[in-house]
View: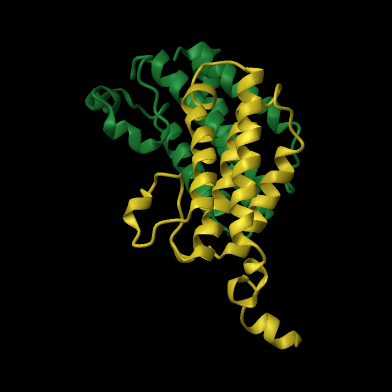
Length: 144
Length: 128
């Protein structure tokens, strides 16, 4: 997927997240944070040139970052660390039996905010350029 | 995890779906359906003795990671095995529409709703 497509997906997931309550929808809140942040991670990796548009991470370690020739920069690494904290909640609170915990929910949302800020910083306005847009090609050409 | 906890977790996801819009939030709903079906499948498999409560699967391929794979395959009859087909449907929808960018339409929504209804019917048969 191109960065622009990842960003649009992340925005949609973020909008769904905003309809939910951390307390009543705890499990889904965790997973929506994970999903939206992963789309932004992929966009950032594409923009920085670590991965290209047809190679997407499904999680921070799948596939392992060491697999790639280029190592992600410090800002992506910081965002990835925050996303990894969210991922670690899933076996216990989403797939597993543990109930809502206010501190866990707070930490999840804080890590999501950190990950989002880091990845958007790397993406900058790069995803707006035609090269990175899902509209690159005849649609844009024909309107100009 | 016990069948009761799986059913309770599935119910929580079902409640969350009521706060979402079928079109505006289709990715979140599809994802929730996947979790609901997985929790139901685990509850049914535990209840029917196909898996121990210590072994929960998250995806269909986990069956082949089970230390007691033959027990599962032997116990899969026509009433239960469609649950795995349904999980496979959600795994496909997840890759294409949640992780991926494929365009969403009413037929996709219907496919995921139909799959959930089939999973619900099988689960209710077991726990009624």
